[in-house]
Amino acid sequence: MRRTVTRKGRRTPPELLAAWVQSHWEIENRLHWVRDVPFDEDRSQVRTGNAPQVMAGLRNIAITLLRLQGHQNSAAALRHHARGTDRPVNLFLSA
Image 1 (spheres, helix red, strand yellow):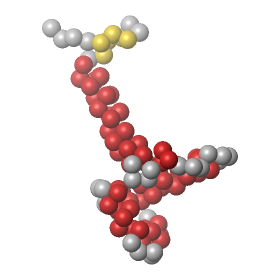
Image 2 (cartoon, helix red, strand yellow; image 1 turned 135 degrees about the vertical axis):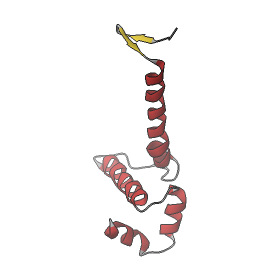
Image 3 (tube, one colour; image 1 turned 30 degrees about the vertical axis):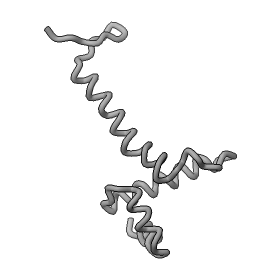
């Protein structure tokens, strides 16, 4: 007998529920963790006006550019690009 989860009169198969949970954690691991740890977003002092949204957008652009260039490890990629003053500019211009 197959068990299902009931929500608002609907039945959700356990496999689908597991896929939803797994996709949530994939988002958490791929974006939020990167923003929290390598970019240290939680300790940001930017709090007024539009600046927090602008900074979040810039961080997202940086993460996207690093991933498009094939970097799997964001922390290592940030260290690599920090060692050369032309590397971040070239990364941006090559996108």
